[in-house]
Image (cartoon, rainbow, N blue to C red):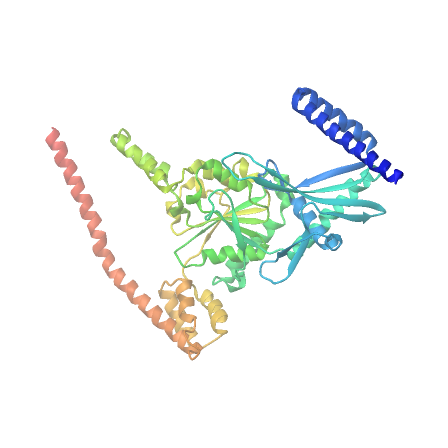
Length: 490
């Protein structure tokens, strides 16, 4: 009984001592000068590190002031999810896109132990919440922390971490699904879905020689990291796809992504507020990606502006109202992205922030684009996607009807030599509209469509001479008017 009372008194004294220490420490932290507290913390850490035999290394989710995801973090996460997730007691389950399989990973503030060449290594999963502004929501930043004994320092930093990163990247490549990013839903950040477009170069309605040339160019670019480093250029390449609507420009981009196994960033310029936001979006893109701006001639008022300004007569240059027209158009579009900002996006300093990227512009009217936008060095390869050729038709016939040859191919070839028809229209006619519609009926539909297109071309050809006379008459009237004005002045 007496011993029990003594034990209780001892515990009571210990509790009083702890409470007194906490009270005194709170008073010191509250009323001591900040400089003294910082100096005290600094020396406390130094003394503790002198006696503490373990080393800690943190791997954050983001690097460079939260602008760019840390590749090492994703690799570590993949490594831990496969090798150490079974040892964790608290797990986070996530569904893989496109499948029903659950992937398990460490939950927040969970600890697991790993062993490498006799060294015991501990991994800790953590998260910190920061408020950058009272007007913005809190920002979550995840991290992994690895702890090991200091005698294994060289082995861990030189060998173990390299092993973790390499193994993690191999796991990522096995589980990787291509993504399609867009900035349309949220103007300031990228959102994505899984990219599952089935297009390949074999399915493109294009001449085989032209396809081979494009494929060789893409594969050479993917293997040219050392070449670009040797010549001192950013590892990127620009493609300009142009041609009438329905000629397969978007399908070509999907085939490029599937060939190279790259992600696709579909950039909506009208959703970008200004050049600064454009640079930030570029900085958030990853390597091994294709950045696409479709219909660049329609995205913003960036095409041919300098040419228009040069063609203005002196009287118009002095007019204030006409000077304000481009500014008004820009304000109405909701975007203040300029031609200069777009050019810097393509090949300025910010374009080199991440390697192995392809930039693709598409347009239906290449003549409308400013030459500074399409010159070599910015758009390195210009690819014209024009009307469907007979060789392109044979590719579509093989895809849609599983036909290599047919008696109706000969009249179709003759009609296609005299008629312009886009691949989208050819594909629409070759697609069976019901289970009862066989290959012959589909080919006959295409022949009727080609004959109709030929009649339209002939009719349009007859109307063109009359249309050409109207501009000539208008020019003559303008000349006569100028002569009359000069006579009046005299």
